[in-house]
Length: 98
Length: 394
Image 1 (cartoon, helix red, strand yellow):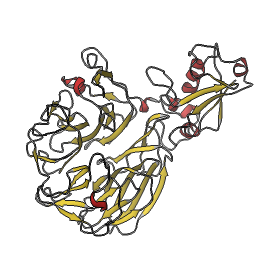
Image 2 (image 1 turned 60 degrees about the vertical axis):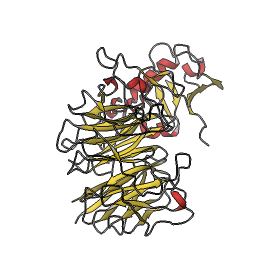
Image 3 (image 1 turned 120 degrees about the horizontal axis):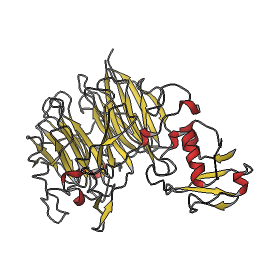
Image 4 (image 1 turned 135 degrees about the vertical axis):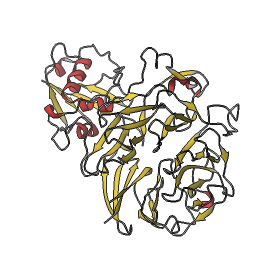
């Protein structure tokens, strides 16, 4: 299972805890994990990436295994530790606005 | 017994203030959607328990919320009301989806508007500024969005479609954002004609449709804006808000960036009625529920100093449809006051006497149960108030 950690406001929206676990078919990439997340919790559609362009929202970042994956292409494989469920993919709200 | 419910949107959540018809003792509930910007909440005139809310965030985008029990509980349209949000019971996600029409023959040729530097810029959805429920159907609601466009839902907010004739009438590429963004912030439905809708955009101006939203015309003749190349241009005016009395849908009152304006012919022609106001800059404007010639504004010092004039919070009332204004100060701070009152942050109830309500960027919500003669704060220390709407309950 793939583990994804969500920021507080998205946990409230999806009515879930800090971390969700997802079954991701096929290769584990940023795109496939977000597809699975939105399929399981459709209320999160549009909150992490744009509905149409699927571009990451500007004030959100993706981290895992102490790496910033925010600018990785959506079809790039995620680290093995994420694919194996050892480490979570972190969706982080940028610290902005004072 | 009659009562009122005041729906308050703030920078950090929504609050619901309720009182009986005396409007003396208030209950305050909230924050709902704590930490989110609540641009606007408005109840259906058909079913007062149906309330629509725009929940938005620079981080997480746009969410639409709906209550079917007068604000006690909320859900995203499409999610069964009151059911736990287990994976099988989640909404479809379309309630958050505002996609500009790009289909052939409608929006396809109108994909850009004017940017700050004069170049053309793609339309990019940012947020919903204003929600206007239908006068006849609780499941029909309009949404005014930034970048400026009008959307409509006929399924209680579960899905949205653009009324793209507005962007498609030809002047769209000349619209440009004001300092607050290029927002469609005012939607007025004509109670006497279901096909007539007025809208206003900063900074494009006011527009009207007479066929339910298929075709639109700019209605800005008579507006003069000194800060644009052609002060009397067909579009490009920074209209801040427009108000109408339901008994006279052809009479409109406008707070423009500068100037209070009035139209007696459904917006075809406007004339200035700023009269003796200390400054005619401001954001809010509203009309008394029972006296269609009684109008309220809150003058703001200037467009570079967004706070009240002379450090005094004064509502100005005209009983003559403009030009002659009297300051209303009883119960309002008359020194050291530096708040603003934003465009959607004033509303009236329909009790007798008419109640007037407004919220400030300092977090106060003031109420007057006597048409403005006297005021008292309902709450003093909310986050900055973005919007105020009132429901009069039987």
